[in-house]
Length: 107
Image (tube, rainbow, N blue to C red; front, side):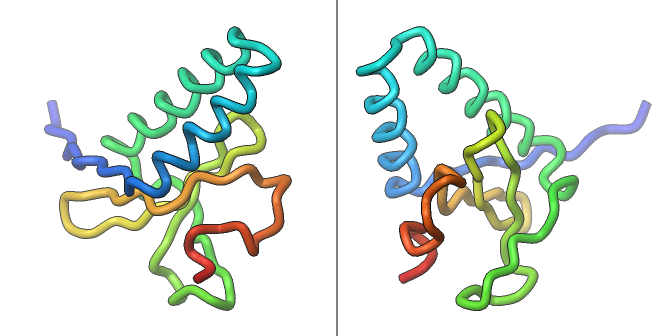
């Protein structure tokens, strides 16, 4: 049996704060929906421990080409990350319905 590599996943504090802002907003409408969203986001984030390269590049004019990848979670949340050695750094978690100008990476 082949040993699979495991990556350490680190969430940037600003991305973490942004994720919880979404969850708090949703919880005002439905705590159940917010809990379900959190479970799905965390499951997708955990999947990056084993398969970070399975997702497509996230190319934007304001980013270095090929540096970032993304995974779409819960049909509308984009988790943007980069892989560096044995680490996966999550740099942004955003609602795809929002303008790219609200991305943490667009500074």
